[in-house]
Amino acid sequence: METDTGRVLGSYYGDEDFPIEWEEGEKELFWIYDDLHCPNPVSPMFFDIGGWWLTCDHMFRRFGTPFASDWVAKRINGYVYTAAVPADPSVRAEAVEYQSRYVPRVPCDPDYASKIGVYMDAVLPHYAWNFLDWWRDRLVPEIKRNFAYLDEYDTESADLVELAVLLEDAIDIHDRHWKIHWMLNFAQFTSTQNLSATIAEVKGEVDPGLVGRLQSSTEDKNWDSVEALWRMKEEIKRDPDLREAFRANAAAEVLEALRGLERGRRFISERLEPYQQEFGYKAIWAHEFSFKTWKEDPAPILEAIRGYLESDYDYPKALEAVKQDLEDAIHELMDDVPEGEGRRKLQRALDLSLRMNPLTPDHHFYIDQGTNARLRLVLIAIGKKLVEAGVLDDPEDVMFLRYNELRVLMTDPGRIDARALVSDRRDEHEEAYEMRPRDWVGTATREALEFPYAALWGFPEKFYRKPSETTAEIRGLAASAGVVEGTAKVVTSTEEFDEVREGDVLVCRMTNPAWVVLFTKISALVTDAGGTVSHPAVVSREFGIPAVVGTSEATERIKTGDRVRVNGTTGIVEILS
Image (cartoon, rainbow, N blue to C red):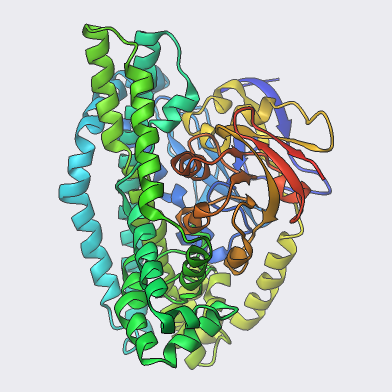
């Protein structure tokens, strides 16, 4: 069997345990389970208006990519799967955006892919060399202006029609910010690829571990957030009243104790609330609207501070260790390269890559987290109005409606039995958690596996990975070097953050910047999702802890309390007892 996109290496179209309904042209694509961004079942509203894939046709058109012309999503048994659409006129696949069917963009010219690569190769270096300046001077100010518009909007006094229009504004902002995201992503991807290619040219080999260490950042919003938490911790250490308040058993009790003290109320107004305003626009899973942000609920912040107190986290020491490792990695790369054109070329590639390092955490802060969080808050404002109007029982219920259902409900509530829809979909959502998603579905070809972004999900390694040799062994991707033995702690929600103890091995589906507070005390990391350039891999290298990512099954096979050995050099996790 052959397809227009290459020789078929494998296929899976569903079975009784994992049924799949296919639309025209979908089976021929290679669909990856998006556990990188959405490891949990997603709400109907997020899938309709919040997906990162909604602007990908713009990205591929803008850059003139020969390897894809669109990137589409499919909701299968509650989970998000995505597929790259080849730049091939013969491809005929259907997709859905904003509850409308459409045919993904493909070129009319059958020779497009073979011709357009010259354009991409010409413009990508320009993006790589200039994007950091564009980001700082033009794009971040634009994003901040958009945030100010949404943050300062008086949603409480607005009626439903006004909020309906505000929602469209928020969607437009979301669309614009994700277009910026892909510009940034391509620019950074180009600088990293250029560094690897130049290392290969000048030194003859590329050490992935070394390249990973060279991507560490020491000046970004992640570290700003950690420093602010550390400063609060230091203030609490020096104040007996604050120390006593933070001895409470849970975040809610800490907050109650703080509110009962004059000193505590001042700490809330001068420290906690400003932190929420600056760093609170994120949730445990940023790529979904169903999780409360830290802006709405400060519990994760208080738990993080309690963890810092418990471990007496030393921010300056941790940051210095990252700086030192980065400096050591630079010396390891450069010291044995003789003077001459090769060294000058390598230094230029390194300098460019180093300049781009802060963009990974910073774009998460502004786009993946900040933009999605603000779209959620507009939806919640609408949900509150619908509760007041008596058509919903909980503001969160809006997440279980579809985009057009919500628009009709806001303007003609008698047309929809919203309570029945929400009830049925909440049940379906809970049932989806009982199902174990497959890593991929559809048709696997060599070209599909070589799609550049597939590496973020650990492909093609996952596709070719051999099964573990024993039941006590789990295979993944080597993400951060080192070997550690420790006690496993499986974490699935923010409520479990405070249960993580100093030296634990964190086992989870995936991480995002909201999880960084745990990296200050864990000894190693194991994830179901991700590739060697994903968030958990990059942050583990920054914090100098061994990590194995992309296992697909760690949270299923490892239990809290298990003794495990994590080998971040080989990508193997052993369950010892």
